[in-house]
Length: 353
Image 1 (cartoon, one colour):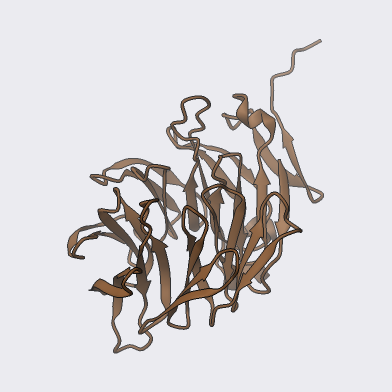
Image 2 (tube, rainbow, N blue to C red):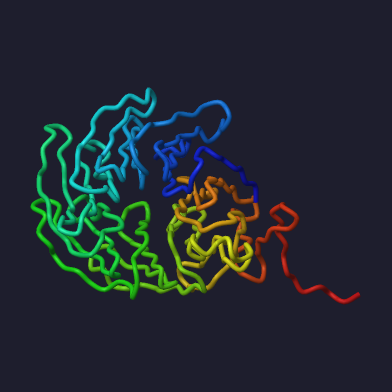
Protein backbone atom coordinates (compact mmCIF):
# COMPACT_ATOMS: atom_id res chain seq x y z
CA UNK A 1 0.00 0.00 0.00
CA UNK A 2 1.45 3.33 -1.11
CA UNK A 3 0.88 6.40 0.98
CA UNK A 4 1.71 10.10 1.01
CA UNK A 5 1.91 12.56 3.89
CA UNK A 6 0.61 16.12 3.70
CA UNK A 7 1.09 18.74 6.37
CA UNK A 8 -0.90 21.87 5.58
CA UNK A 9 -2.03 22.67 9.12
CA UNK A 10 -0.22 23.44 12.34
CA UNK A 11 -3.11 22.13 14.46
CA UNK A 12 -5.41 19.06 14.34
CA UNK A 13 -7.42 18.36 11.19
CA UNK A 14 -11.19 18.35 11.53
CA UNK A 15 -12.32 17.20 8.08
CA UNK A 16 -10.97 15.81 4.79
CA UNK A 17 -12.83 15.78 1.49
CA UNK A 18 -12.20 15.42 -2.24
CA UNK A 19 -13.91 16.86 -5.29
CA UNK A 20 -16.05 14.72 -7.59
CA UNK A 21 -13.19 13.99 -10.02
CA UNK A 22 -10.81 12.99 -7.25
CA UNK A 23 -7.97 15.30 -8.25
CA UNK A 24 -8.42 17.89 -5.46
CA UNK A 25 -8.14 17.30 -1.74
CA UNK A 26 -9.61 19.74 0.79
CA UNK A 27 -8.62 19.68 4.46
CA UNK A 28 -9.88 21.82 7.33
CA UNK A 29 -8.41 22.29 10.77
CA UNK A 30 -8.56 24.10 14.06
CA UNK A 31 -6.63 27.01 12.68
CA UNK A 32 -7.68 29.98 10.58
CA UNK A 33 -7.23 28.42 7.17
CA UNK A 34 -8.58 25.75 4.87
CA UNK A 35 -6.04 23.95 2.72
CA UNK A 36 -6.38 22.46 -0.75
CA UNK A 37 -3.93 20.14 -2.49
CA UNK A 38 -3.75 18.81 -6.03
CA UNK A 39 -3.65 15.02 -5.62
CA UNK A 40 -1.66 13.87 -8.67
CA UNK A 41 0.92 16.66 -8.28
CA UNK A 42 1.08 17.25 -4.59
CA UNK A 43 4.03 19.63 -4.60
CA UNK A 44 2.98 21.75 -7.55
CA UNK A 45 -0.37 23.23 -6.56
CA UNK A 46 -1.85 24.38 -3.25
CA UNK A 47 -4.18 27.08 -1.96
CA UNK A 48 -5.16 28.38 1.43
CA UNK A 49 -8.64 29.77 2.05
CA UNK A 50 -8.50 32.12 5.02
CA UNK A 51 -11.33 31.83 7.54
CA UNK A 52 -11.64 33.43 10.95
CA UNK A 53 -11.69 30.86 13.74
CA UNK A 54 -11.41 27.10 13.56
CA UNK A 55 -12.98 25.43 10.50
CA UNK A 56 -15.10 22.35 11.13
CA UNK A 57 -15.75 21.15 7.57
CA UNK A 58 -15.88 22.09 3.91
CA UNK A 59 -17.91 21.01 0.90
CA UNK A 60 -17.22 21.56 -2.80
CA UNK A 61 -19.60 21.61 -5.76
CA UNK A 62 -19.57 18.87 -8.38
CA UNK A 63 -18.01 21.22 -10.93
CA UNK A 64 -15.23 22.12 -8.44
CA UNK A 65 -15.89 25.84 -8.78
CA UNK A 66 -17.18 26.78 -5.31
CA UNK A 67 -16.37 25.64 -1.80
CA UNK A 68 -18.21 26.41 1.46
CA UNK A 69 -16.66 26.21 4.93
CA UNK A 70 -18.16 26.17 8.43
CA UNK A 71 -16.38 28.39 10.93
CA UNK A 72 -16.32 28.51 14.72
CA UNK A 73 -16.35 32.31 14.36
CA UNK A 74 -20.13 32.23 13.68
CA UNK A 75 -19.73 32.41 9.90
CA UNK A 76 -20.23 30.42 6.72
CA UNK A 77 -17.66 31.19 4.01
CA UNK A 78 -17.94 30.57 0.29
CA UNK A 79 -14.83 30.74 -1.90
CA UNK A 80 -13.92 30.41 -5.54
CA UNK A 81 -11.94 27.17 -5.64
CA UNK A 82 -9.28 28.25 -8.13
CA UNK A 83 -8.76 31.91 -7.26
CA UNK A 84 -9.44 31.80 -3.51
CA UNK A 85 -11.73 34.83 -3.80
CA UNK A 86 -14.34 35.15 -1.06
CA UNK A 87 -17.76 34.97 -2.75
CA UNK A 88 -20.06 35.09 0.28
CA UNK A 89 -19.93 35.37 4.05
CA UNK A 90 -23.06 34.45 6.04
CA UNK A 91 -23.22 35.62 9.63
CA UNK A 92 -24.71 33.20 12.18
CA UNK A 93 -25.71 33.49 15.83
CA UNK A 94 -23.28 30.80 16.98
CA UNK A 95 -20.44 28.53 15.85
CA UNK A 96 -21.24 26.76 12.58
CA UNK A 97 -20.72 23.02 13.04
CA UNK A 98 -21.45 21.79 9.51
CA UNK A 99 -22.41 23.00 6.04
CA UNK A 100 -23.20 21.15 2.80
CA UNK A 101 -24.35 21.94 -0.74
CA UNK A 102 -27.48 20.25 -2.05
CA UNK A 103 -26.66 17.25 -4.25
CA UNK A 104 -28.41 18.17 -7.51
CA UNK A 105 -25.38 18.54 -9.84
CA UNK A 106 -27.23 20.92 -12.19
CA UNK A 107 -28.53 23.28 -9.51
CA UNK A 108 -26.25 23.37 -6.48
CA UNK A 109 -27.68 26.62 -5.21
CA UNK A 110 -28.71 25.69 -1.68
CA UNK A 111 -26.77 24.97 1.49
CA UNK A 112 -27.89 23.45 4.76
CA UNK A 113 -26.22 24.76 7.90
CA UNK A 114 -26.06 23.53 11.50
CA UNK A 115 -25.02 26.09 14.08
CA UNK A 116 -24.41 25.67 17.80
CA UNK A 117 -25.30 28.12 20.53
CA UNK A 118 -22.77 30.66 21.71
CA UNK A 119 -24.25 31.15 25.18
CA UNK A 120 -26.49 29.08 27.43
CA UNK A 121 -29.54 31.21 26.67
CA UNK A 122 -29.01 31.02 22.88
CA UNK A 123 -30.65 28.46 20.61
CA UNK A 124 -29.29 25.85 18.22
CA UNK A 125 -30.62 25.90 14.66
CA UNK A 126 -30.60 23.97 11.41
CA UNK A 127 -31.03 26.38 8.50
CA UNK A 128 -31.55 26.17 4.75
CA UNK A 129 -30.27 28.99 2.53
CA UNK A 130 -30.95 29.85 -1.11
CA UNK A 131 -27.67 31.13 -2.53
CA UNK A 132 -29.25 32.73 -5.62
CA UNK A 133 -31.33 35.21 -3.65
CA UNK A 134 -29.28 35.12 -0.43
CA UNK A 135 -32.41 34.30 1.56
CA UNK A 136 -33.11 32.04 4.49
CA UNK A 137 -35.72 29.49 3.37
CA UNK A 138 -36.37 28.00 6.81
CA UNK A 139 -34.80 27.34 10.18
CA UNK A 140 -35.62 24.78 12.86
CA UNK A 141 -34.57 24.75 16.47
CA UNK A 142 -33.13 21.60 18.06
CA UNK A 143 -32.06 20.76 21.59
CA UNK A 144 -29.09 18.39 21.33
CA UNK A 145 -25.93 19.66 19.61
CA UNK A 146 -25.91 18.83 15.91
CA UNK A 147 -22.68 17.18 14.75
CA UNK A 148 -23.49 16.87 11.04
CA UNK A 149 -26.35 17.74 8.71
CA UNK A 150 -26.58 16.00 5.31
CA UNK A 151 -28.80 15.94 2.22
CA UNK A 152 -30.48 12.67 1.32
CA UNK A 153 -33.02 11.02 -1.02
CA UNK A 154 -32.69 13.28 -4.06
CA UNK A 155 -32.58 16.44 -1.91
CA UNK A 156 -36.03 15.75 -0.50
CA UNK A 157 -34.75 14.91 2.98
CA UNK A 158 -32.18 16.40 5.33
CA UNK A 159 -30.61 14.28 8.07
CA UNK A 160 -29.05 15.67 11.22
CA UNK A 161 -26.82 13.65 13.57
CA UNK A 162 -26.81 14.67 17.21
CA UNK A 163 -24.74 14.47 20.35
CA UNK A 164 -27.41 12.44 22.20
CA UNK A 165 -27.20 9.61 19.64
CA UNK A 166 -30.31 10.61 17.68
CA UNK A 167 -30.71 11.09 13.95
CA UNK A 168 -33.48 13.49 12.93
CA UNK A 169 -35.14 13.50 9.50
CA UNK A 170 -36.33 16.86 8.16
CA UNK A 171 -38.39 17.77 5.11
CA UNK A 172 -36.18 19.94 2.91
CA UNK A 173 -39.11 21.89 1.45
CA UNK A 174 -40.57 23.44 4.59
CA UNK A 175 -38.25 22.16 7.35
CA UNK A 176 -40.80 20.25 9.38
CA UNK A 177 -39.56 17.25 11.34
CA UNK A 178 -40.65 13.97 9.79
CA UNK A 179 -39.29 11.60 12.44
CA UNK A 180 -36.34 10.91 14.69
CA UNK A 181 -34.82 7.72 16.03
CA UNK A 182 -32.14 6.62 18.46
CA UNK A 183 -29.30 5.52 16.20
CA UNK A 184 -26.62 4.99 18.87
CA UNK A 185 -26.23 5.07 22.63
CA UNK A 186 -23.68 7.89 22.45
CA UNK A 187 -22.80 10.75 20.12
CA UNK A 188 -23.28 10.17 16.38
CA UNK A 189 -19.92 11.30 15.04
CA UNK A 190 -20.32 10.88 11.28
CA UNK A 191 -22.77 10.10 8.47
CA UNK A 192 -21.58 8.55 5.20
CA UNK A 193 -23.44 7.41 2.10
CA UNK A 194 -22.99 5.29 -0.99
CA UNK A 195 -22.73 7.02 -4.37
CA UNK A 196 -26.52 7.19 -4.84
CA UNK A 197 -27.18 8.21 -1.22
CA UNK A 198 -29.62 5.33 -0.88
CA UNK A 199 -27.60 3.62 1.88
CA UNK A 200 -26.34 5.39 5.00
CA UNK A 201 -23.55 4.48 7.39
CA UNK A 202 -23.33 6.14 10.80
CA UNK A 203 -20.51 5.93 13.34
CA UNK A 204 -20.57 6.68 17.04
CA UNK A 205 -18.32 7.22 20.02
CA UNK A 206 -19.93 4.13 21.54
CA UNK A 207 -17.68 2.04 19.26
CA UNK A 208 -20.36 0.93 16.78
CA UNK A 209 -21.32 1.72 13.20
CA UNK A 210 -24.73 1.05 11.67
CA UNK A 211 -25.72 0.56 8.04
CA UNK A 212 -29.26 1.63 7.11
CA UNK A 213 -31.29 2.10 3.98
CA UNK A 214 -31.82 5.81 3.37
CA UNK A 215 -35.53 5.52 2.59
CA UNK A 216 -37.13 3.75 5.55
CA UNK A 217 -33.95 3.89 7.69
CA UNK A 218 -34.22 0.23 8.65
CA UNK A 219 -31.05 -1.37 10.00
CA UNK A 220 -29.22 -3.48 7.41
CA UNK A 221 -26.09 -4.35 9.37
CA UNK A 222 -24.11 -3.40 12.46
CA UNK A 223 -20.36 -3.25 13.03
CA UNK A 224 -18.59 -3.29 16.37
CA UNK A 225 -15.11 -1.98 17.10
CA UNK A 226 -12.94 -1.95 20.23
CA UNK A 227 -12.52 1.85 20.19
CA UNK A 228 -14.57 5.06 19.93
CA UNK A 229 -15.33 5.78 16.28
CA UNK A 230 -15.08 9.32 14.91
CA UNK A 231 -15.54 8.70 11.21
CA UNK A 232 -16.59 6.17 8.57
CA UNK A 233 -17.10 5.78 4.83
CA UNK A 234 -18.48 3.37 2.22
CA UNK A 235 -16.37 2.28 -0.75
CA UNK A 236 -17.44 3.88 -4.07
CA UNK A 237 -16.95 0.40 -5.59
CA UNK A 238 -19.78 -1.01 -3.46
CA UNK A 239 -22.31 -2.57 -5.90
CA UNK A 240 -19.91 -1.93 -8.79
CA UNK A 241 -20.83 -4.16 -11.72
CA UNK A 242 -17.31 -4.94 -12.93
CA UNK A 243 -15.26 -5.23 -9.75
CA UNK A 244 -17.38 -4.77 -6.61
CA UNK A 245 -15.64 -4.08 -3.31
CA UNK A 246 -18.09 -4.51 -0.46
CA UNK A 247 -15.98 -2.63 2.04
CA UNK A 248 -16.30 0.12 4.61
CA UNK A 249 -13.62 1.89 6.62
CA UNK A 250 -13.88 2.98 10.25
CA UNK A 251 -11.49 5.09 12.33
CA UNK A 252 -11.24 6.98 15.58
CA UNK A 253 -9.30 6.01 18.66
CA UNK A 254 -8.57 7.24 22.10
CA UNK A 255 -9.75 10.73 23.02
CA UNK A 256 -7.28 13.47 22.12
CA UNK A 257 -6.75 14.60 25.72
CA UNK A 258 -5.38 11.16 26.64
CA UNK A 259 -3.15 10.64 23.60
CA UNK A 260 0.09 11.78 25.24
CA UNK A 261 -0.24 9.28 28.09
CA UNK A 262 -0.28 6.12 25.97
CA UNK A 263 1.65 4.47 23.14
CA UNK A 264 0.44 4.61 19.54
CA UNK A 265 -0.76 1.02 19.57
CA UNK A 266 -2.66 1.44 22.80
CA UNK A 267 -4.51 4.47 21.47
CA UNK A 268 -5.96 2.34 18.64
CA UNK A 269 -5.52 4.91 15.89
CA UNK A 270 -5.52 2.36 13.05
CA UNK A 271 -8.01 2.55 10.19
CA UNK A 272 -10.21 -0.56 10.15
CA UNK A 273 -11.37 -2.24 6.94
CA UNK A 274 -14.64 -4.18 7.26
CA UNK A 275 -16.71 -6.38 4.98
CA UNK A 276 -19.98 -4.52 4.54
CA UNK A 277 -22.05 -7.70 4.24
CA UNK A 278 -20.49 -10.12 6.73
CA UNK A 279 -19.48 -7.38 9.20
CA UNK A 280 -16.08 -8.95 9.89
CA UNK A 281 -12.84 -7.02 10.13
CA UNK A 282 -10.59 -7.64 7.14
CA UNK A 283 -7.56 -5.70 8.26
CA UNK A 284 -6.16 -2.57 9.84
CA UNK A 285 -3.92 0.18 8.48
CA UNK A 286 -1.55 2.03 10.76
CA UNK A 287 -0.45 5.58 10.10
CA UNK A 288 -1.61 8.32 12.44
CA UNK A 289 -0.06 8.72 15.88
CA UNK A 290 -3.12 10.56 17.20
CA UNK A 291 -6.90 10.36 17.07
CA UNK A 292 -8.31 10.05 13.54
CA UNK A 293 -11.02 12.68 13.02
CA UNK A 294 -12.01 12.24 9.39
CA UNK A 295 -11.66 9.65 6.65
CA UNK A 296 -12.80 9.51 3.03
CA UNK A 297 -12.53 6.99 0.18
CA UNK A 298 -11.06 8.42 -3.01
CA UNK A 299 -13.85 8.78 -5.62
CA UNK A 300 -12.54 5.92 -7.78
CA UNK A 301 -12.21 3.54 -4.82
CA UNK A 302 -8.47 3.07 -5.33
CA UNK A 303 -7.56 4.37 -1.88
CA UNK A 304 -8.58 6.71 0.89
CA UNK A 305 -7.45 9.83 2.71
CA UNK A 306 -7.50 10.46 6.46
CA UNK A 307 -6.88 13.39 8.78
CA UNK A 308 -6.26 13.41 12.49
CA UNK A 309 -5.09 15.00 15.69
CA UNK A 310 -1.46 14.92 14.55
CA UNK A 311 -2.19 17.58 11.89
CA UNK A 312 -1.31 15.33 8.94
CA UNK A 313 -3.45 14.29 5.99
CA UNK A 314 -2.44 10.84 4.77
CA UNK A 315 -3.30 9.51 1.32
CA UNK A 316 -3.30 5.73 0.89
CA UNK A 317 -3.44 3.88 -2.44
CA UNK A 318 -4.32 0.19 -2.51
CA UNK A 319 -2.00 -2.33 -4.15
CA UNK A 320 -2.93 -4.21 -7.32
CA UNK A 321 -3.87 -7.28 -5.29
CA UNK A 322 -6.82 -5.35 -3.90
CA UNK A 323 -8.39 -5.10 -7.37
CA UNK A 324 -7.81 -8.64 -8.67
CA UNK A 325 -9.93 -10.42 -6.11
CA UNK A 326 -7.32 -10.99 -3.42
CA UNK A 327 -7.43 -9.50 0.01
CA UNK A 328 -11.07 -10.15 0.80
CA UNK A 329 -10.46 -12.30 3.88
CA UNK A 330 -8.67 -11.40 7.04
CA UNK A 331 -6.42 -14.46 6.94
CA UNK A 332 -5.35 -13.64 3.37
CA UNK A 333 -4.89 -9.90 3.62
CA UNK A 334 -3.53 -7.92 6.52
CA UNK A 335 -1.77 -4.61 6.70
CA UNK A 336 0.69 -3.50 9.32
CA UNK A 337 3.46 -1.03 9.85
CA UNK A 338 7.01 -2.14 10.53
CA UNK A 339 9.99 0.17 11.00
CA UNK A 340 8.06 3.05 9.44
CA UNK A 341 7.08 1.15 6.30
CA UNK A 342 3.71 -0.28 5.37
CA UNK A 343 4.10 -4.02 4.99
CA UNK A 344 1.58 -6.42 3.52
CA UNK A 345 1.77 -10.07 4.19
CA UNK A 346 -0.37 -13.10 3.49
CA UNK A 347 -1.00 -15.99 5.81
CA UNK A 348 -1.21 -19.16 3.74
CA UNK A 349 -0.97 -22.80 4.56
CA UNK A 350 2.46 -24.01 3.52
CA UNK A 351 2.81 -27.39 1.94
CA UNK A 352 5.16 -29.67 3.79
CA UNK A 353 8.19 -30.74 1.84
